[in-house]
Length: 152
Length: 110
Image (cartoon, rainbow over all chains, first blue to last red; front, side, top):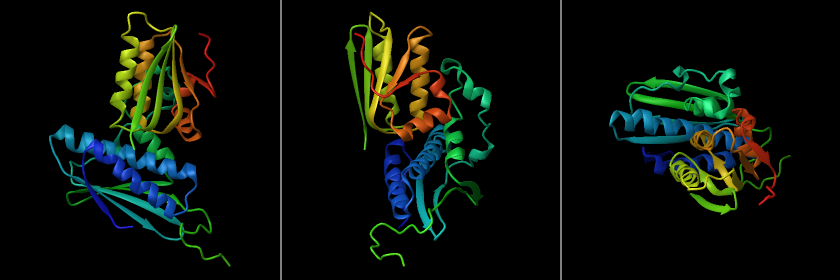
């Protein structure tokens, strides 16, 4: 799939979601892993828009890439906002997850869902670019949708 | 893709029906609905959130549920009805199922 660049606003995030859904389908991911990947990318993209750009008074873009080999699908988000490493956020503790809702902290759940949902998550800072990588294993012998060739 | 939010009152029960995609851009409309439900002169005794057609919920939606629970207080239960498997996975992973009632199909007592 060709990479896609969108303005970094919450309203544009559904375009990224569509991209991920399409990539997951092409990679032959099952329904639940595909949903978890979409959730992970959406959560991190939301943080990029709000913490990386808007709270800093910045505007900019997010670019999304899909890379696939026979074993895995990797979605990459790139932005030029302030350095923001999701892995440096404080982890949600098991105690927090057992608290009644009215006593919950509001932050951290998005990153928790991201890290629990994908097979591998990586963050890199390259020059002035943040790069977030989300990798999912592909099911064995998955055929891209639209490829009608029977498997020998 | 978008979120549709509907509010309905039946006796002492308030219903919010969510359909579509509850992402961070859509969350404010769910939050507004919660606000509206608890701003009524007669506070409902139960809030039922119908989720059969809710295809997606991000953590922004979870934060709305926290907000709803805070508004509702300890005595007003929150029921999630018809939660899809994928949305339920998120609710369970984050421990929210301890604080709300989850039912397949809510049968009103009103």
